Length: 124
Image (cartoon, rainbow, N blue to C red; front, side):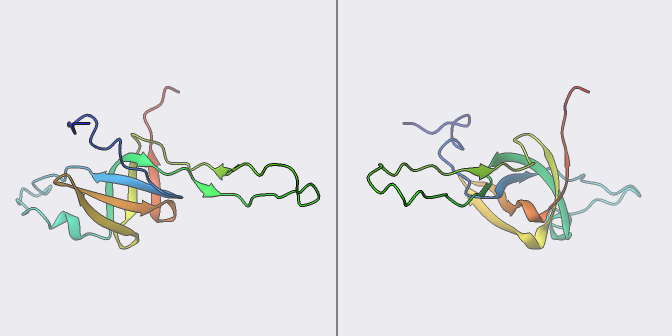
């Protein structure tokens, strides 16, 4: 399979309660008119970015029925889903994030606990 811009992130599986975030483009200029070099905004404690992929959520304990040992044990993993969804704009704590570079692009893997707020475009 050949990687293209459309399918390069399809191979990524986010684990557990984590989300994959791509930083929102920072304004190049401050409100007073000063131009900031790249990287200044990236050092702030709270960042914002778009959620690209989400993990399955928090795993629930598996209930085993030991009184019927002849039954075939099926893999029945259940998860409590995350509030975050793909496409949401997230405000998150940078110290709770892990920076990665994948296919030349910078992303952050963030636990849902480090996400402070979500903005979702939905019809009301």
